[in-house]
Length: 328
Ligand code: ATP
Image 1 (cartoon, rainbow, N blue to C red):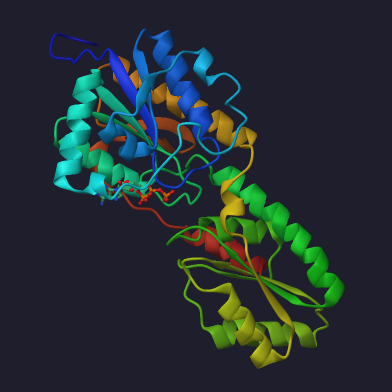
Image 2 (tube, rainbow, N blue to C red; image 1 turned 30 degrees about the vertical axis):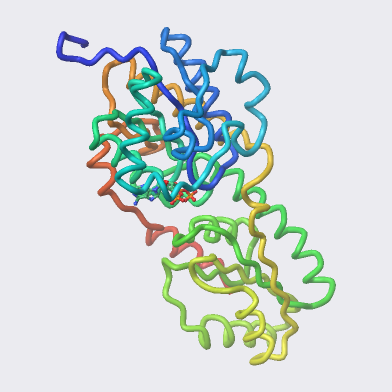
């Protein structure tokens, strides 16, 4: 219940930062529409922290966000700003928010963007974090906006690669994004029935887990192989060369790269982004800033910023056990 000590915020800014992710537009739209619903003034800040410290922002109305829900990328654009990481840059960002009368900044981005948000909050500018990254590598949430679309994009691409790998009796080594985490690779591996999945969360003995496993499978009559490697675990080109040199099985490398970042967001990303955007605004309306919107036990919640930043997660033993049963 609000009392006289509860801050009353009337104006928010929303920005997207770091790598773009499908569903960011759905999140911006939800922030704008919920903000307007509750009578807040909502500024769209262009190009992440870069635009904040330069005052590149404009008021967004419900009309400004029509036709954005189904679009990939982020119409506010995103950036990686080195200047923002300096004390001078941070001070500029805080004063620019004051110039425009922005009380709270909603930051949609990954863990780097969250660290920037924490820096702003420590300098007196309240923030709300919304998890937006295809990598799902944020420790304080089970789910990040863009993750589902990226996995579906990768799955569809690998299904196509399997057709050609099987026609030529080849090994296809596919490198997937995920930064230091293997969430995308792990799930896409399971969804595509990959023979081998290499992720940072699982130790690999290359001779035993890759070469020997492939040779034994070949001796049982297997004709083609899908090997998935998370970018944080290794290099597809190098792994394909090693497989071919050691086993004689023809191996081709594919790096899916930024293909995984594009495209229209899936239903799941649109719905999750919509719920999270509304939650962010409702925190502001209730005078609760310096929160991180998160998914816990499948539900959208909000957490204290400082506490959330200390949280970690990893792929569970159970997940790894199931994948192990189904692998080569
Ligand atoms: P993704 O994981 O999807 O790429 P991200 O948010 O982790 O997203 P980063 O490039 O790490 O992407 O961060 C985005 C921006 O946040 C940076 O350009 C910088 O301005 C700011 N930032 C990153 N790390 C920090 C940090 N340690 N302290 C302050 N600001 C940071």
